[in-house]
Image 1 (tube, rainbow, N blue to C red):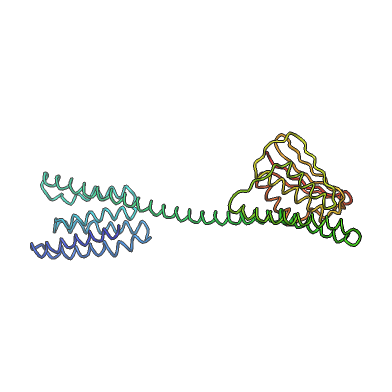
Image 2: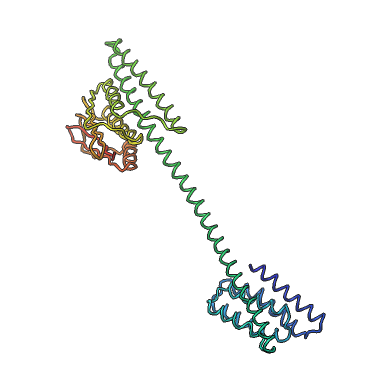
Amino acid sequence: MNRALGVLTCGALLSIVLGVLGSGEPWLALVLGVVFAALATAAFGWVRDGKGLAWGAAYVAVQLPLAFVLFTIDAGVGTTLFLVVLVSQCVLLRLPRPAIALVIAVVPLVHLGMSLGEGLREGIGTLISVLFAAIITELLLREQRSRAELAEAHAKLRDYAAQAERLATAQERNRVARDIHDGLGHSLTVVQMQVKAARAVLPTDPGKADDVLAKAQEQAETALAEVRRSVRTLREPRPVPALPEALKALAEETSATGVTARLTVTGTERPLPDEQREALFRAAQEGLTNVRKHAGAATADVVLDYAEAAVRVEVRDDGRGSDGGPPTGFGLVGLRERAAHLGGELAFTSTPGRGSALTMEIPG
């Protein structure tokens, strides 16, 4: 916008120069034209660069009388263009609208020295010209502001998109970490327990040791399949089995390691979303893994309760228990994240000599 007004100012000054050189206009018109043009370019840029309303008003107070004097000497096209430039600059300086309206109303008064008819005709023409210039400048200024706001909005959207991508990446990384811990960690724990059991009975009962090692091999194959499923999950969702059947298989798997696990299902079974089934299954899996690794228990009970507004999975054992507060391992951290994501809760209780209980309850 400033560049366009600069070109218009130079064009107006050129018109005055040609008038002075070609038709014998007073040289004073050229001097005043140069002064006006210098102020309209250099001084205006300085004033507009954040100098405040007072400097803007002072600039107009100097330029408007200068244009009037110039018009009385040379009432040509160049001087009229100077008036158009001045009104546009009033808008760019963001002067109060009453002040801009006053300048627009005063500009046609440059024709007061003419006859009534001619002055009225020229005054109306000048009024229309400067009014049109003010409107166009205001519209262009609004468009410029809109473009700046749009560019800022686009920049913010890009930042938000980048943040969302980073968050999604972190969430996916945490999800994969939970799956690896809950799935592979559980399977490797079972294999470890079975290998220990096989080594314990190997000197006295090689046949039984061989059976236990065969089960360990099956569990290792299950762990490998779990890893492959986790990798495939990165490309496509994996199916989640029905919860009662999955928990039954989990209990049987635990019983095979020497800890008797029993499953009890209460309430009326109903279909659940995959994410909820996955979370409840992982809670039972983590609970039974902890029973085998830390509890020193002989039995464990898995309860699946279908209540009216929620579904609960609880794993209780008859192990040694503890009074040191809930464990803070990665498994429980991951379960808490799963429960919180689904609007549910995770609880862990433990009593010395009476065992522990891990409970997850989620709406559903």
